[in-house]
Amino acid sequence: MMDLNNRVAIVTGSGSQRGIGREIAGTLSSLGASVVIADMFQEGVDSVVKEIQDAGGKALGLVLDVTSEASVDQLVSKTLAEFGRIDILVNNAGISQKVTVEDMTLDDMKRIFNVNMFGLFLISKAVLKPMKEQGYGRIISLSSVSGKRGGGVFGGAHYSASKAAVLGFSKNLAREVAKDGITVNCVAPGLVNTDIWKSMPEEIAKTVIDSIPMGRPGETKEIASTIAFLASEEASYITGEDIDINGGSHMD
Ligand SMILES: NC(=O)c1ccc[n+]([C@@H]2O[C@H](COP(=O)([O-])OP(=O)(O)OC[C@H]3O[C@@H](n4cnc5c(N)ncnc54)[C@H](O)[C@@H]3O)[C@@H](O)[C@H]2O)c1
Image 1 (tube, rainbow, N blue to C red):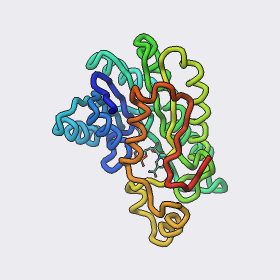
Image 2: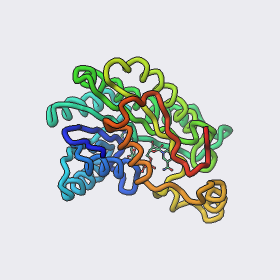
Image 3: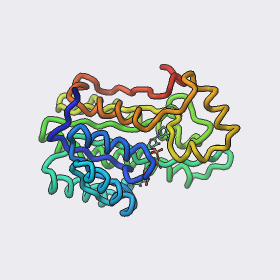
Image 4: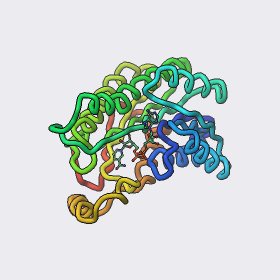
């Protein structure tokens, strides 16, 4: 049975009302972890913190911009001041854009990489010191099926490239810190039932569903439960791995 009591988890991008991050934070909290809800907007952060506290969990809300080194440093120092340790980092914050390479600008490319890869780098680097001092850590990053076989419906090529970069970065980091008690893994979801899905035209939605062997999008709970496993003691010998969560739509 997974038990995250006495563990402290930071979940980036967890202030989105129907997003995957909120579900991850709720799941880690339900297993006993103290969670830091970190996102761009105070209102979203406050509402998820309240939800977790109302359910009896421990949560701290912090406004974060993963692209800012100062903001990331503040997140780490405030988390340590409040909870004294950082055991789990879930790199969930991410952005995408629907644009073809032909219409894409260099600024589009930089904006996507700035959040999805450079921001993920800044925060992963910032938690290494406390994790190394503890001799324990779990870093789990959200890649995507688009990073493995290209996107199409949602992601532009810049999104796919950034999510592929997350996989390479994580495998390299996993090797660097393997002897420090820190594991580094990724999950690669396919289409997940969030607001993006709801806003998709019916015809496109049908085409996408038809391409998924299980015939449905994933639920946020199905992403969160896999992440909870990777964050637990039970996953102690798994590092540098990426787990597909996609209903069979892509198999490595
Ligand atoms: N929804 C899907 O189908 C799907 C599939 C595969 C992978 N993913 C990945 O899962 C993660 C969550 O996706 P989601 O669908 O829940 O999206 P979402 O938009 O609901 O949540 C993303 C969150 O990241 C936050 N964020 C954006 N830029 C930030 C920054 N600079 N600093 C801090 N926070 C920032 C946003 O405010 C938002 O709350 C993303 O990394 C996404 O790429 C999603």
